[in-house]
Length: 301
Ligand SMILES: Cc1cc2nc3c(=O)[nH]c(=O)nc-3n(C[C@H](O)[C@H](O)[C@H](O)COP(=O)(O)OP(=O)(O)OC[C@H]3O[C@@H](n4cnc5c(N)ncnc54)[C@H](O)[C@@H]3O)c2cc1C
Image (cartoon, rainbow, N blue to C red; front, side, top):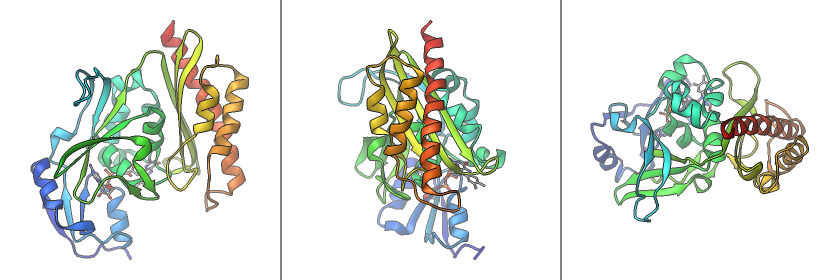
């Protein structure tokens, strides 16, 4: 099937209007952003929405900025990078702020799809699609992001670790919209993304995002996001644990790689068997740790 089923179309002129259009329509109404995941699914009739709400005119959802200020309600003073949900892949790729503070984004974007997809596809659409092989979900998992979700009752913030509920399923409710991704800025940070794909621009056979935070020669914290290595994006929790409180070394990276190989739960498919994917989890985690650490130490000196 290459033609979508008939569908109503509405172009939102405000965030509140988009939320109100979603209300009462249940799963029949869907937000459309870049359309690079949703339209192919509609053509294959894997998705058959009754109403598409196009948010491409909501410029207020398109930005990458550093934020320092009072938190919402909790009295903290967060220092973060905030990324609007409608920010395109190409903007993430070209952002000097991200390249400098969290280069894992540029690493990943250089390997995502091709220019036509990167010109339209958005970070919000990527996260909400919740494809296990999607790269930015691993990036946001490694960086310990928080996502802002807006609905009829207002805004709620949830940690990325609670965002993915299963394959193609997220915590975004039927009348809700993902509006922003927030990533904490902490000193001593380094990050990197490693991916193996069958051909340039393809989804990953396996990909790993890593972030480390180093203080006085010790890894004080680490985040590892695994892509295409389970039914949804995973955190390599045991690998993260083994890194914390230790000085970086090749032996430590190899040990973390072995732990990541155990932390994942890949499925055999046309991209490869389980053993191969577990092997990739170890190798890519080790490589990404090496690069992330070198970047962190370079900033420290
Ligand atoms: C040929 C090709 C190659 C690709 N290769 C890769 C790759 O290598 N790596 C990779 O990571 N990705 C890849 N992609 C996917 C690409 O990154 C898409 O852009 C992305 O998955 C979806 O973004 P979108 O803005 O197009 O979302 P859409 O297609 O517009 O939406 C996707 C889903 O998210 C929902 N949604 C969108 N925005 C919001 C929001 N703000 N709030 C709530 N729900 C929302 C929609 O309702 C829909 O369910 C590829 C895509 C193509 C077509």
